[in-house]
Image 1 (cartoon, rainbow, N blue to C red):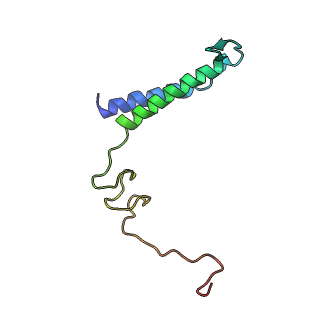
Image 2 (cartoon, rainbow, N blue to C red):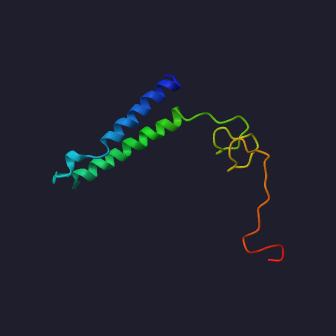
Image 3 (cartoon, rainbow, N blue to C red):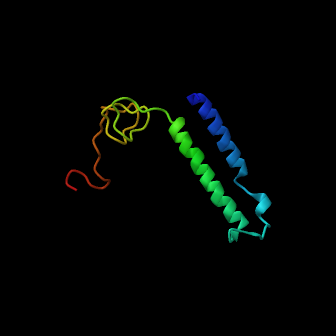
Length: 106
């Protein structure tokens, strides 16, 4: 499957899970499933499903890293820029001002 098709499929799955999040049909259900309230078991399964879909989204849809960027750098970061540097801000530095109320003699 192409990356675009994965994106379409996974975003549709996220939209469906968003709609299924509030289980209005189980609010007044007093049955026990696996020894737990029905709503709790539903949400345990829901969390597992959402985790799987988001994990697949990261694997198949996340944009590729910029060549030369450090591991963990956001997409679009400049190669060699320290982590936490916003994209496009490589090489731009500003001095850190002293805390307020403390001048040169602080």
